[in-house]
Length: 320
Image (cartoon, rainbow, N blue to C red; front, side, top):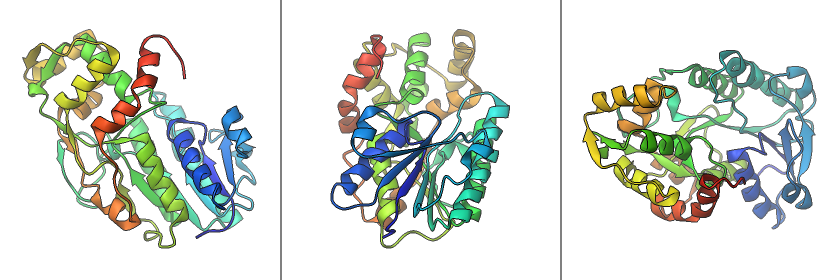
């Protein structure tokens, strides 16, 4: 197990905050010190727990000079997933390249990057194992994250590809699904699509395990990182409707017709985003859990129940 500090890029973000919590649990039993790399200072709960802060911005490589000094592990959790193509490449592509140069300069021996299964593009995808699909990103955000993967793997880092991540701090997956349900109250193809999902707390367990394991996966390896059991859209969406006090869909439309209605009622949703929710997108994720000797957790229903309060507060105007 690496003995030096763990540097967490993006440690104040959605996934990063959950990972820091996991690392602190281990630090409480004699684990290494945690250091967060972010543009803004970490929240009080982190600093009170002894988390150190290193200021840096992936879109400004000059600010990254020396950030890896004395770190033994780099957990790269920073990413930009918006629609500004220039920012996608400056943060995900060029920023990751600059961060990897600093990791090499500092001699960091263990690197993990959290990417996305969206690098595979638009499916349907039905249970492929790692290596079975050739990445074919359908957006600039996904293409730039694939480039980030290449930089990380070239430096011997390990890549995780979760699909849809939910839990406290989620501002993308469930909010996007909620907007779709409100705008188009109908099931696409009966809501039969099977989707790989993972709670952010379970993804954080995987990342923390990669930081500490005495038997790390092969350098440059890629792993699917979702719960092994896919969830049907109908099951997933009904729970979201309950949480956010939305009426469940009362109609059923063929997928193509559903997409046409969505384009009219929710024009900001892309074809790719619609497909990710309305068609099968599930991946064999059993390998990473097995390799790290972890159980995958109780699954969607239980983990969503744990996130009820956060989503409920957000839907009623609260902010976390």
